[in-house]
Length: 194
Image (tube, rainbow, N blue to C red):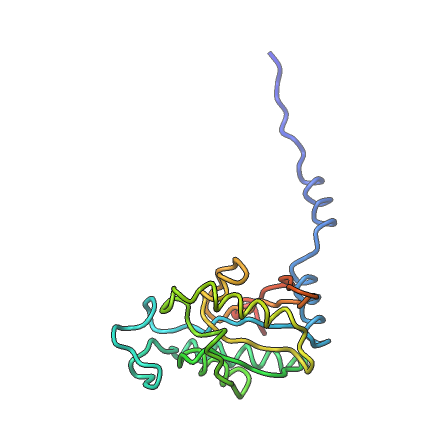
């Protein structure tokens, strides 16, 4: 009868760790990209009141009829803006979905927002426009911003349709534009921002 000895995996794990970049190093690399400008930052609106979509009969011109940011969501948006300022990240245009939760997130984080319905309005509410809106957004984010970084505040469904990533509320997905497309360069959860 043979005796099986446990495999010594400690040294193997240590060697593997040397080959893999640390989360901090990856995070630093993405912040450095942003510091250089020319990136696109997709941000899902911050934390809202519980629910999915909006109440029946909601209206874009009346925030009281929509699902809106909570106090924690407002603080989350401010934390994102503070992280950008602390790292001297240049912010060019800030575009947002017309939904109040997106506009408020953008304004709290970056101090301003321009509404852009064609590319950023909720796909959840208008599923028939998914292909068209995603194609418009894909063309837009594939062009390198000429000033600072472009920030786009939108909904999880829109980010998922464009990138395949389902972001958490307040999460940032950083895109690097290419000649005719883009690549995902990194992600930041708002809780990880200091």
